Every structure is written in structure tokens, then in C-alpha cells.
Image 1 (cartoon, one colour):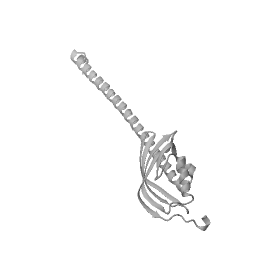
Image 2 (image 1 turned 30 degrees about the horizontal axis):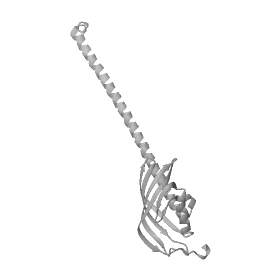
Image 3 (image 1 turned 90 degrees about the vertical axis):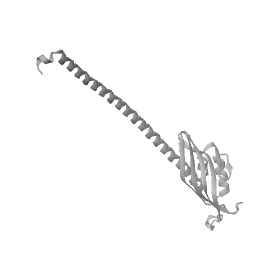
Image 4 (image 1 turned 180 degrees about the vertical axis):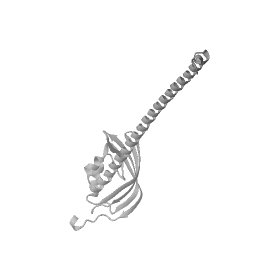
Amino acid sequence: MNTHESRTPSAWRSRMVGAAAVAALLVGGGAGAAAWASQSASEVHTTAASNAATAQRLADIEDIRQVKARYFRYLDSKQWSKLAALFTAHPTIDVGATYSSGKELAEKTAALLGDAPTAHQGFLPEIQVRGNRATAIWAMEDYVSFPPGSSYKSGFHGYGQYHDTYQRINGHWYISSTVLSRFRVDTVPNWTPSPAQK
């Protein structure tokens, strides 16, 4: 292109149109890039929040599993005060007999069992967490024998389910209700202590 051509109105208009087109592409591309960046940041934030919620839910489920594991362990190891401390202040407890507190459950179970050995297991939990409350269904198996002189003439081997609710208080989970249903109960002999255990 020579100098004369660049000064004609036609050439000048052509250059202006081209410059406008380039500007439009740059502006449009910049706006698109900004929109993409903004959308990407939003998606990252949403993903991070979702991941954090999932991590918290899994941590809560594990904490609840630990609470129920202690329930079974404290029953069988006869740690009655620790068993009582697993419950909220006013729980619902129905395990074949009903109790109004963890303390009552612990005291009456201790009096009933004495030193007789027991074995309690809970497994296959289905745990749902909703904020500071949770529900769970546990498959269970228990083997319970009674001491000599008990009003119960035989022990039992039972199979069933616990239906529990839990409440988080000051960052810790507690059992707020537990209802035990046994589907099968087989009779077993009561405990006969060895001479060394008498």
C-alpha cells in the first residue's frame, strides 16, 4: 500500500472498521475470559464447601461409631460409670427393660449381671447425620448369662437391632435414645464361676 492509498477516505474507513473489529474481539474475549474465571472460582468454592461438608459428615459418623463401640465395651467390661456417661441427660432407653437415664441403666444392669460374663457386638451401622442430631440402626448380637442365685434361671444368646438417636453437645456425641429389638433368642446356661472366681 502506498502513501496516497492510505490517505483516501476508503482506505481510512477500512482501517477504522478493522480496528473496531479487533477491539470488539479483545473486549469480547476479555469479558468471556472474566466470566469463565468468575464461574471457575464459583465452582471451586462450591466444590471446596462440598468436600468440607463430606469430611465433616464422615468425621461425625466415625465419632458416633466410637460412642456405640464404647457402649458395648463398657457393658462387657463392667465400667458402669463410663457407660452412664455416654447418654444425654434425659434419654429414652428400652433394651427389654426401660430406663430413664444412663445412670439408671448402668446401676440396674450392674445389679442384674454381677460378675457374670457377657458379650455384646454391634455391626453394619446405618448412620444418618443431620446437623447436631443423628440416627443409626445397628445389627447386634449378645450373649448374656446371669450369676448364681439370679431370678433368671438361664441366660440367652440374642440377635436383633438397635435403633438409636444421637445428639452433639459441646462438640461431643451422646446417645439420646436407644431401642433394642431382638429377632431371635436362644437359651444358654447361666454362669457357673470356677472355684478360683468364687
